[in-house]
Image (cartoon, rainbow, N blue to C red; front, side):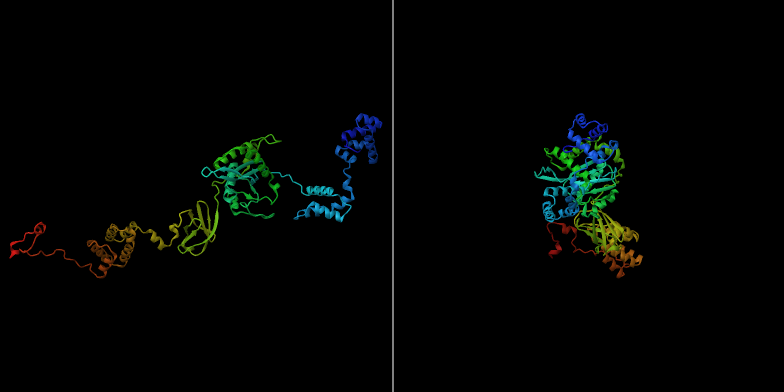
Length: 526
């Protein structure tokens, strides 16, 4: 039966003719095959020792195995010898510098009657393929989101400098519907990565159960086959959106074959179609990318009567978890010590934030986002501040200060006048006149503190009299009031009516001093 094997339908015709006793020449003529081929099949039939009726009842593949048993090379002694060492040779190929040619040289030295180099490499390649089979992954709608960066970059031109700015391309794909999202970002750093990931979830309108990133540094701190260490920011992102992170295995692109395919399609359907266009901002570039990606999602898929977008809208979108009410903000973590002034210093802002004075001297944990700062100690939140980027300034909550410091911040003319009013009207009038002086209020706060302290230590009636004396003499000072009280001069009444001067002719009056030319009286000449 040399040459091309005959089809099983033709062989069954041959068997029926043989069963009816038709001669070989007639069979050959009726079937259009040579007489020797007929003779070869009939000789094989004799060696099988199986009834013709049973052979005709067999399915074509089973019948073919009876007449064409396969390549006898796999029954060769050389193959039996090589078969037991194929796993060893495959493992050796993973070592540095080891090639198939080197392994064949070692093999033929050990077994001189073995295969030639080409046959040895053939069997080794066959075993290599068979030992690494691919599995078909069945994807569940709304379960996973594959995310990756494309290997090739896109660019735009800076209008001000004329510089070409190269950007990374982020691609996300829902494997069930193969619905994709593409966006260009400046880099693969954590801020751009989280922004792109957040944008993809907003584009899909929901959150899948699992995020499957590649082992890029923005997502995975330390890659590991069994327990990869996920970046804390990505963990915070997953917790905020109610999902989880399961990275793809290291150097296993088949784990995320669909997003790898989306990268390949992006080169054809986005990169190639935009290759002759020039962009002058990242925003314009992303508008064009979004349009081309939309066309890609609306293109009818091969061997399927629908497009990716139709499959996503019909079967997957309603299974995604709803997005949280507030978008995710990037969190940063620090451990800082509370200073004696009950403030912490955030070096990234060069700004001071207050903490309750009871925590002075201890270390607190600080979590801050783009807009807010939270401070924790002993397992509870002790302070919240809005981020302030004013260098060297202080953000202080009055509730965090002790009573002495609160008093310092409470000081104002109104504060002291209110305190004085609670004491007596005379003190109120004195302080009112005190603040009407042409001085800065803060210069007078200590005087007010002294007056209030003096009022507490002095007999009320005596203090009121002292205030009246100060008002009469327009001397509004703590020291004057203290001297009046200590010298006991509150009861001394000053004589206000001065005695009139006696009349005398030798007195120059007002008219004398107002004249321009002096005119002496007659008695002056004498």
